[in-house]
Picture 1 (cartoon, rainbow over the protein chains, first blue to last red):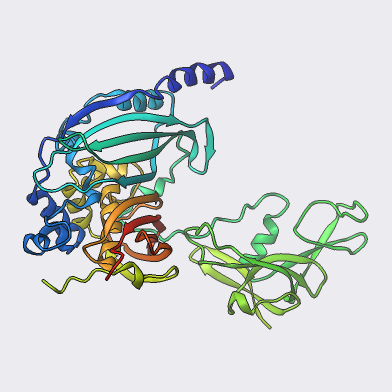
Picture 2 (picture 1 turned 30 degrees about the vertical axis):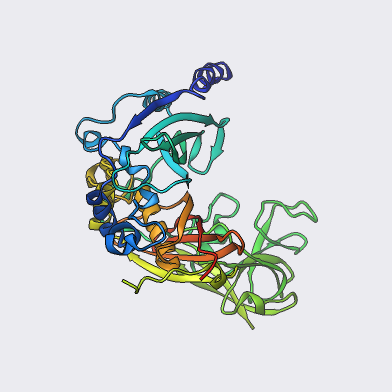
Length: 319
Length: 143
């Protein structure tokens, strides 16, 4: 998209902010015991407030209620969504407008329901919905896109508000899907992100695959350097060879990555800057002890290990 | 029927952990949850449509995740608790064959108003965090 095209796109897109997706309309079915029981069975929810009339009669409420989390259920379109697709409304029009411009990816990111009143069998749930906001263009891990948020307001037959739902959705230009994902029936445990192996550092990772950690050495002045790079910082020579590290090391600094959790990686990994006996530093993981046991100056001994199905990495243990 | 106990706000303190709940994610739960919430989006019951969307199998719909989060909290609080809000951040999809572990911790507790906030996470054993959020309930103030 050129800047002009983007502006034209956004002018049309932002016109959807404030547009009503639907005016206040009643659910096809009143709140009823059958649908509540169906829901509680699947959820494994034995809360007697939903299904036990005898208990409910003597409870503070004096009656059974619908599970609040069912608030959105009552007004669902139903089977037509599968058989003939969603009926057109301003939200589906907006989604189609996104799709036409390449923003075909869709991801629900947040949903917040707030409840002001409990509904009981016999009540009728009404819903009205508006496109409440659309973000500016964002670069996300999934691809470039826009977040939009719908606001649904629920009320009963007496026009008393039952609650609201805010639903945030990312519409994005999808990045290439890994081809393997769709044509296997096996759930794949993700492996770590593959090391980027370029012209200047591929040799280093190839050595790791063979169980060795090498340190680059300038052929001209013998200065060691890490991570790998083409030129010596001391004498600017581009001639180099390497030595193998003994992996005796010492913690210079460390932290634990607690958030976000990344699929394929252990929880709360300890990441450290480690000074090797040869004199260069390496960033790696400290394993085999608790975070609380790590301290600056701690002596470590590393070894190259297979950490998942596809990945060899140096890992450092307390010496 | 006197088996059903409801916590009083006096029983609750910030930092209290809720009993963890392991949920087997099966095709039955995913399809059953989708239909119980009247969600007929094909990605929740038709594997070929889910695969065309880039996933290996059908996946749990949001309304089921919300339902499980609500159940997890009221299992602990008891039936007189009034659920005031469910705020869910959605993460990795739940697919058949996974196990989701739901955990929670009390993050705020207003002893006068009975308002209790619980941080809840639902993490599956294959792809990690499925849902993360907070649930607010009101508990009886006296016993």
